[in-house]
Length: 102
Picture (cartoon, rainbow, N blue to C red):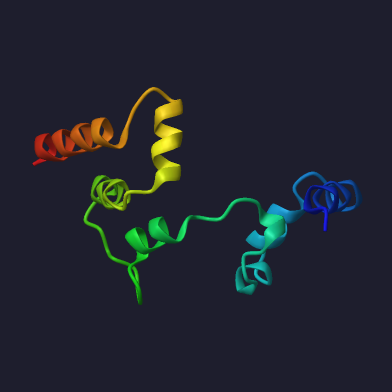
């Protein structure tokens, strides 16, 4: 199955944002996230953000960021590396920011 070809055809037939609009619609919110939607969140990152049964309820976005960095995702590490950073550098900056915020 050629998913990029299907995505192109859907966009040609229904508009450039057809897939995104479907998943934002009331009907789409009840649909499973499928392969036409693009890359999904890695399971290790999803677990870091949402836990196993319910939302973790982080105090701030900085705390959520630390949880994601502590998950040890190789994909996240690769993205940060491509941007000239690393999980360790970002973790230090996030901790310092949280410390200053009190």
